[in-house]
Image (tube, rainbow over all chains, first blue to last red; front, side):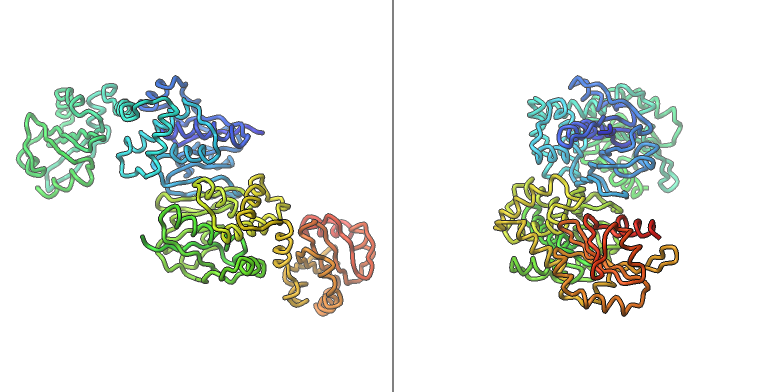
Length: 302
Length: 302
């Protein structure tokens, strides 16, 4: 049996890392394969939290696949894969995305429109009555929590919760909601990033009828914790030199936002969101989408 | 719930028809779907045998899909599908072929390199603990027999036999080998086709160092029964007017062939296959492949 690599997409997230680990274990156990789970980049803060929690080492990082045959997880499009993907044979895919794929031979291609690839793999384990080691189950549970934002994202399906509950039990996670909050918080750990990185990391520029706006957004699980750095943010926002800067801080768990506003159109901005601005802060209940819930009311008011 | 069609490839075979029936039932039972299994053409003789055996009507035949969303079985490439495949959304695929597919959204895409799609679907039923009605199981068992030539084809995998045994039991087929022989025989029922159709249906022309050859081939489960029409075949072969005509009759169950030869190179042909020609008949034990076992020795001898 020739060794085969198993890996997820570039800029790996928790589902991609967990799925590579889980798929590699599954293939070795059930298909007599000799696979190694690897990654196309460093773990992000959320993934590192799960690795630390379950006392696992980060996966070996590759740019090119060194084995002639490979398994893909959490992606199927060549543009998201290793650099030399066209030079190797994909013999299996576990995914939950849209498909853009071709092969020269039949292969295992298991794609399901579920919340995470970890969910897909959970049912593959279950189908074949294969026991899941507790650390692997812990990574998989973390992946479901991550991809579905603790079962609250609109991508969540009816198959995700049973998978998460079963995996959490195997992993010895007694309260997966509490664990999930910690996990997501680790992923939105703003403290490791500078104020300038945060306000500008995702920012875009807009022109509302002659009013130049810069609008940034960060995700968090604790808006107030983030707002503790308000003066830091305001300093960074002012330093950018835009006429108007709106920095939206979104609670991804409760689907609410607060925003910091610096500029000369306080009345219009307050009116756009039907609220008051106190100490530069707007309360934006129910707002999560810049594209659908922030830009349109500003467009309307100007 | 909007109705969705489920269909296999053009020129349907038993696996394509059985898979459409089985997938439609599975989707209606387990996914709350309202699907209809349809076909892209008339059942062939083998499929008609299974339909008659299990007292099922042939599927409704379509050229274009009338529903905006469809499921594909036993194929994934648009060239093998309905004419208007690019105008509808594929929401699920069950297949066992190489892949050449793209979508705009995540979907169910279950492709496994197994002997038949019926095998793939058997494990889907099993995974979800869904009972298979006996007639559906009968069609699925027939599909496995058909695609794997009763588990003897090189495409057979270790997952096909357990699936066939379980399905045969559900279907009340007590001796699946005996049933399978009948089934395959129905599929290779040469009696319904004229001698000219048989000798020329699959024939190709070759030139061996100036010697023009026509080589035809048919599959059967009973070479002697086929050879009962020897004089008819010879008449048809002579009427074609080739210098040399070799008509190979292959026993797909025992992987043997006999061939009828008409021409002026009896010695060379006999030498090529290290045998004698008696009454125009060559015995070709172990020969099943024209490309790999008939053409090369003729090339060598001339």
